[in-house]
Image (cartoon, rainbow, N blue to C red):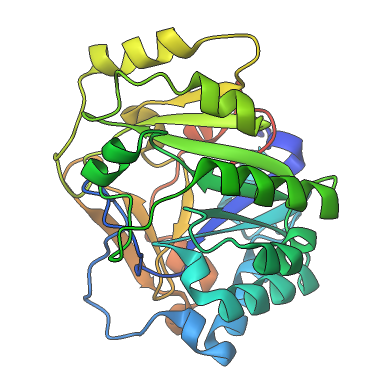
Length: 305
């Protein structure tokens, strides 16, 4: 029995294409076990193409062999590229985006935007349906404390970001902007509203720091709720995810091509065997996904990851 249709009849697959990042956020969850000797697939064109083909076939709308088809209804697919910081590999991201679109995926990305200059936006904007940017603070010192700066001390500059977003919207009027903010021990008292009103995203996803890898900078439920309450406003399109909302509610692939999922019982992740070794159908059977939780994340956020 179908629980409900997927939002916009679109199923979203999150491929974390790399663990590499030029920032050093102290609570980063993008750290994966190195049990497999398989290198990150983005560096091998043949392997990354085969992975996309496996995903396109297994998650093809109407594929009765996919167990999700019995509980979710979707008519289209979206590949969301995440990291680490995916735009450290500009050439590979552009290649994968073109290949994914050839196979019928819409494409989105989540980036810290530190490498998103005008030239790259000129190449990328037309390939994306959603541009996601992670912003945890508008304060220079706080970003430094969090670890949101590169080795040269460069941090995201809001004025430059506003200009490059404006260019993306000009080049692709259908491009939707999403901002992700992780509420943590350093920013939970901050007023993010002025920056959000300047950037004017279609969606602002507010997440509580998830202690999958570390407890550093974790916040209490009371602190998280206070941040959310202060920012509730008709002109701020805020959608909230607490820790329990994130567990077993995303379709996620690690850089080496394994499905992975947040573990409900221990720190870290549970992994499937490599998709390229046993196929997407068999690999997907090794992880748990809750269709009800997947849909619950869209109860308010109707459109995108």
